[in-house]
Amino acid sequence: MDALPPGAGRAPAMFGVSLALPDDFAGWRAAARALVTAGIAPEQVAWDSPADPAPMFTGPPPPAPPAEAPPPRVPRAFPELAEVVIRHRDPARFTLLHRLLHRLQAERSLLDVATDPDVSRADSMARAVRRDAHKMHAFVRFREVPNALPGTDEPTRYVSWFEPEHHILRAEAGFFARRFAQLRWSILTPAASAHWDGGSVSFGPGGRRADAPPEDAAEELWRAYFAAIFNPARLKTDAMRAEMPMKYWKNLPEARDIPRLIAEAPARVAAMVERGATPPAARRQRALPQPAAAEFTPPRPALAPLAARDFTEAELFPAEAAAPAMTAPGATEARSTASAASGAAGTRSTPPAAPASPGPAAPAGDEARPAASAPLHRIAASGVAVPAMSQTATPPDDARAALDALKRELFGRNDLPPWTANSTQGVFGEGPVGATLMFVGEQPGDEEDLQGRPFVGPAGRLFNRALDDAGISRDEAYVTNAVKHFKFTPTGKRRLHQSPDAGDITYYQPFLKREIALVAPRLLVSLGATALRAVTGRAMPVTKVRGSLLRGTDGRPFFPTVHPSYLLRIPDASAKSAEYDRFIDDLSKAAATARSLPAS
Image (cartoon, rainbow, N blue to C red; front, side):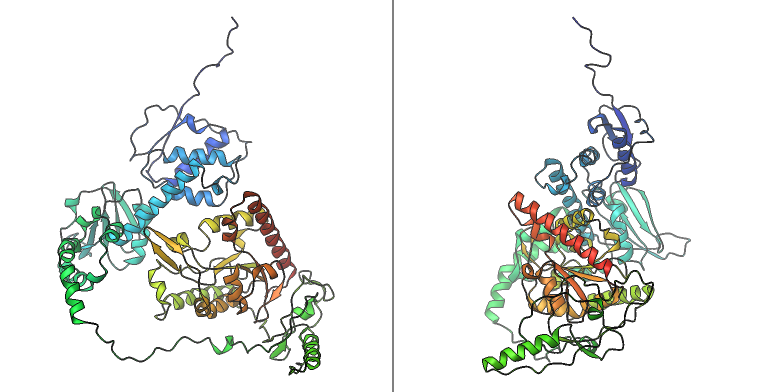
């Protein structure tokens, strides 16, 4: 019988990796990158952290990877997913993420396969962590502790007890530091504690329920307020238990009144029905917000549709010395044609407008600006007279401050659409001022609403992947949405996306215009029908103008294409792949067009 070669039939060597914290993302990331670079499979590694049970089998630390080996590469969505999953209480989370990282080296689109067991498990864990964080934001109750630290300048400290399901305290402490910046507070949990001194957050060991104060004087006021706003006519006990699980009731002062309020609800409803409806108090109608005078767009004359043609830079970008109101390129010829056609048909014609003044030739040596005679991409002339665009650029620092002020102004308004009260927060745009490309989407989704950032959900992850495939860095682009709040319909535990209507788009349109003017991109890219309507002010099918270079009512060039969520809704795999390739072509074309245009 032939002898086995050395090492044959042996189990693979085991290695052990210990992390300093249960949510040590930085430590896990460094170790996992080294493991994948060294070619060590996930099943050969036993992970360990302070909050998890010790692994049954472990081994020595893994060897260092070869110096010449290339580091692993992953899509942008994976680190964001891993940073959330690492907070889950499941001890297998480290191995799961290591396995995903290992597989992503050969399966670049793995995260887009929602039915894959590893991807599905990671997504489920991330949702559980985010839900736990949401409950923490809602159910932490601080109680006042006078003279918490005798002999110091701190007369009062506010202490709360909370029992999270996952390791979320370190990640969510910043939320409470921003929300309660003026207080000195401590949050105690069984595993760890967080303490805010007005300048920084520190972490310590866990505590016990008895370490937190039982109650304070403010709780009676809160219980009275809760009882006053409790509406017995809208009582839904199943929904109440779903949104406010009973495991949190022991730490909520109002919970002791809930059984009594539920028992009294039928009698209170009967009394309300017997009293009848109360007529509303007379009040003045609040005026709707109106766009600023500088953003007013003159009404469009009725013109015949025009065919697309090539335009030169001088036509696209008239000089500053042009008249205050100028006609879009090709409008003169179009109106003459429309006038002749109308006269032949016996209808009233529109008088032609004065032609636009040609712009000056590009200065010598300006290589970024194409020659005046070189045609750009095709642009459909609208024939609408629009005000001349200002060529005075806002300094980047001033523009960034103005964007922050615009964000505060919008989200601080008291006349927002009523449905915005259901959203978690507003989602403003992000990206550099003066970006080459500015992408305008429809509205935030469920994950965007929870994180407060645009394009971070499933469509956003697909969008990031398409940008990478098109050779566009998202860090160099500005991304925003036409509507800044998540509009949805509650369906049990899920929030079903609801498309914005014309009134919603109209409300946010002045703010979008101001945002575009401050960012001053070279080219605007509208994603989907809602964004196209917000940019143009009119409804039009995306499929008829997709991939064309057009000009908006303010004279700014823009490039329409589909929204990435459209690709997610295509059921057929081959059709989805073809549309994805076409979407990449649109992005590549937009990037090439933007580079050929002068800076705003």
